[in-house]
Length: 287
Ligand code: C5P
Image (tube, rainbow, N blue to C red; front, top):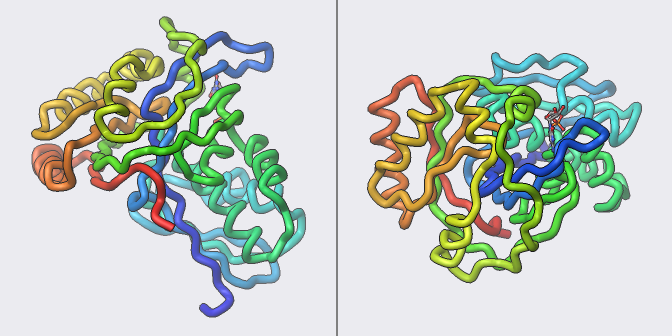
């Protein structure tokens, strides 16, 4: 494995997500504060091969086809049209679930193959390729706390950002982003100022109290079980904020400490054996 490159693709969380007007290109203007979960995500390994090959494994691998449409292969081809690599994707994150999944994998592919193929593609080029793959891919390239605007591709780093214990829950229901946007009725608009950073958890939570996820109501209308997930998360001891991420159906709660987050994970797994439940930590990734 000496020639292999291994890359982690952390889950993306939209701590808030406000939607504005539908643009002439069919996308909605949005504003969102995105953070990443250091220790919950997919993993990709790149090894030498003469052609481009993708194998998918892991607990959610079966839900995903390794066909040419796969965002990992599209990302690899967009980075370099005719170089080879064997890519093994370990799919730990649920598919079509509002926490980046495919976008995080595509972004990790761009990072990993730039290193593996020893390319001199710079950050601006990577971000442009990422934007062509999907609205959430650019923010996943760096996987650092960021304020997203435009259709998601205009990024401003948000620092400092406190580390926050988090629990993620997906009721194993897939919701398609396009359908959720189409079901949108009320929106907060995109008039917020770029936040300048958050010194501690209280400051962040006070800020988040003034915000929402505009996609939560339309996603709940398509998948009412999201309401059950939010109810369950918000009653856990130490939960300070429960909300849906992205276009759902994954919801999260931020906790006051790691022990409470761990306890909540165990309690929720026991009470809902069919749900996907993980605990982790958001904030600035450890270097
Ligand atoms: O960019 P991505 O392929 O992830 O978007 C999936 C769908 O979600 C789009 O086709 C569009 O219907 C909707 N969307 C949107 N506005 C955004 C992002 C996504 O309307 N900012």
